[in-house]
Length: 119
Image (tube, rainbow, N blue to C red; front, side):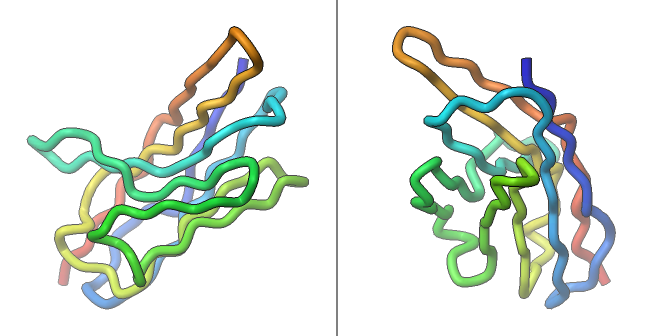
C-alpha cells in the first residue's frame, strides 16, 4: 500500500507561480511512473506531466515550457513547478503513482489539491 499526499495548491494571479509537492509513503517498486493529472469542473481528468524511474519526463502540450516535473528519490517526493500560470490551469491537481514488478501492477492516486488562477 502506498499513500500519496499532495500540497502546495492555492490561489494565484495569472502569470504567477506555484510549486506542488507529492509525498509518497510506503514501498515503491524499482520501476514506476509518477505524475500529475488535473481535472477542471465538468471536464475529464487529463495528464499534466509524468516522470519515470529512469528520469524520462513527459508533458501535456498545454503546459510545455511552463511546468517542470522533478523528483527527490530520497524523500519519495515528486514536484510540479508551475510558472506563467493561466486561468485555464485552474483545476484540482492529482498525484499519481503507477509501479510494477513482473505480473503485478499497482496504481495509486492522491486526494488532490486545488489550484485556482484568477485575478
